[in-house]
Length: 105
Image (cartoon, rainbow, N blue to C red; front, side, top):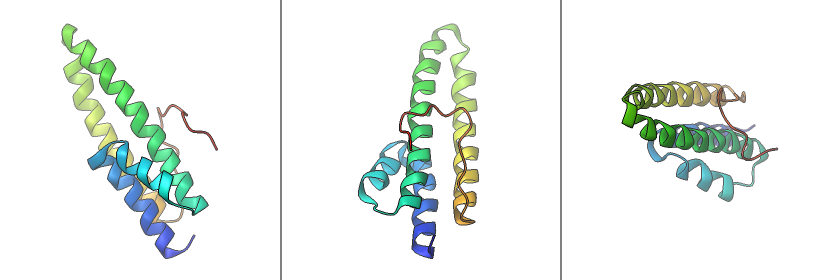
């Protein structure tokens, strides 16, 4: 993986923090680089999974448990995206735990 691919792979994971699934989706659709596409796929799978977990947590707010889940989910997203970005910067791939595989290799 060349340095431009590494930068784009890192940005894909960082974009997930700020744009949810939109940033990784754009990178996934636009890039032609296979390593960057794999990183974008991983990030996109996690962000879509997080969206589902957030919707479930919003429903659980009615029984007051959802507030805790929403806070934990926000923190987990931040930590997971940072770990993935650091690994991408080192040229490694990282599978997000708790991620549902919507897009497969």
